[in-house]
Amino acid sequence: MKTTLKLGLSAISLATLLALAACGGGGGGDETPAGAPATTPPSAPTPTITVQGSAPAVSADPLAVVFVPQTETSTRSVLQSIASNAFPAQFQKAPNDGAYTQLGIDASSLITLNGGTVADVAGNGDFAIGRWTNGSNSIGSISANQGAHYVVGKPLALVRTPGPTAKLTCTYLSGTRPTSVSGNFTPGSVNSATATIDLNGPALDSFMIDVNIGADAHAASTATGTTISGVLQASGVLHHVQVMGNDPNKPYLAIGYAMPTPSSGDVTGVVVMKCQ
Image (tube, rainbow, N blue to C red):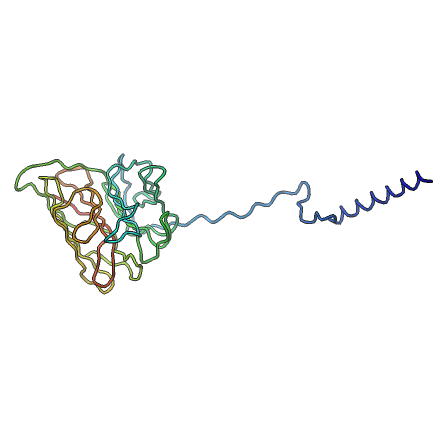
């Protein structure tokens, strides 16, 4: 009789366990049934980048790069303030020809547009300009009224030419719309920009820019006797200066700027001038 009782209890226990398993009992109701496919969480949407304007691709290695980040002011450059003629081509990415979305000197210091708009795209193959706006980059967010401005071009070294008449006159060719660092004003326009290169240095003999933004119809700044390459401050304005192109007798002069204005605060942008 004892043996029969044990067998009966075992049969009852086994039946109970089978019933619980069939009903999802025993605390395992949240587990995935054996053989069922695992669910994959939805991936984040790919950031969208739109392009306004067009420019041919710039083909050179290395490339000259001017970059004015959205965080720069007229009195303070930042880590990403750039004016250089030694940027390896492999790190400058432009999926749509002259519309650059990545810049950098090496793999550990890339500046990337994560999403938004590349506006004001223009160029001729020797240079390309553009403005990142209405999105974000690896530095931070950029509103529709702000901008991170760039010029990418073929690097060019000017030859020192001594003499009292060894000068090149530069006239405005192209530029991005000036933007306020605060983002409180809609992008403006460049009224004019001129420069003179002294080949005795060579050096930037003079530079003048006049912009329109907000209530400032003619906000102007000038600089005299400064270097022809690099990021520098002169006359209360932060300048990014690089020479670009193929012909040392007719170079392009690219200048990025962060300048104060009477009522719109600090304003940034880039211009390209043709010199001869």
